[in-house]
Image (cartoon, rainbow, N blue to C red; front, side, top):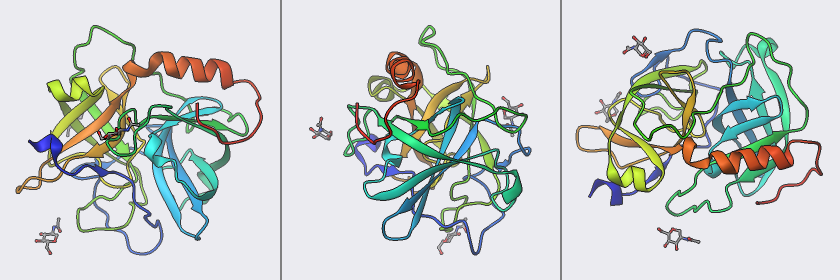
Length: 258
Ligand SMILES: *[C@@H]1O[C@H](CO)[C@@H](O)[C@H](O)[C@H]1NC(C)=O
Ligand SMILES: *[C@@H]1O[C@H](CO)[C@@H](O)[C@H](O)[C@H]1NC(C)=O
Ligand SMILES: *[C@@H]1O[C@H](CO)[C@@H](O)[C@H](O)[C@H]1NC(C)=O
């Protein structure tokens, strides 16, 4: 079955410099600049000098949500970039260091179960028209939201190994799938979807709330279509509220798992 195929995490050690294609997050289009002020670009400076990138989204003045697999093992520092549309427009970008990371305690790096993480920022960010938080979807009645959008700076073309300099977005439709529901995932299928580098970004649906976190994709079919999987945020509301409630006030700066 498709689901048992190799899973691919949507994170790469991509560079933002050098050649870039003015293409899309697989099959999407450039976002209207600053129309998604909750979008965060996570930058990890590795011990070996490389920089890794993930997406993320702002929940509060000092909390960002991303995927647990975006937690690198050996990194010197984590920084979040806020207010970004074009990564080259440095003046627009607000950089804030990460104080503490909270990957889900049951995150499994083999099958990507519970692929969700909260980042506590070192300082509170001031909201403005380019930087503001997004609300999370509630438990609801369990029905699938219909039209959703994914956005990110990830690889826009399957042949391209660079991030895109500007924020891209793509419309997707969620598929009703028993396996995904059991795994606490939202899933979509097709040619269009998040690409490598989009990990940790939000799945935003019709009411403008965040429903999912970009996690992984399945092996492409012969026509290039894939299954894309998103951690289902409503399943983690208690955990999210607990971390923010207990860790939200000033705490000791150290990385540890909850
Ligand atoms: C992680 O997932 C793999 C594959 O499903 C499983 O074999 C392993 O037992 C899991 N690890 C934990 C700690 O649950
Ligand atoms: C990617 O490369 C393959 C093999 O070189 C080529 O057949 C395909 O058309 C390319 N795809 C895109 C989107 O450029
Ligand atoms: C994408 O979704 C938005 C909001 O649901 C809608 O307004 C827009 O027309 C859609 N765009 C495409 C290309 O389907």
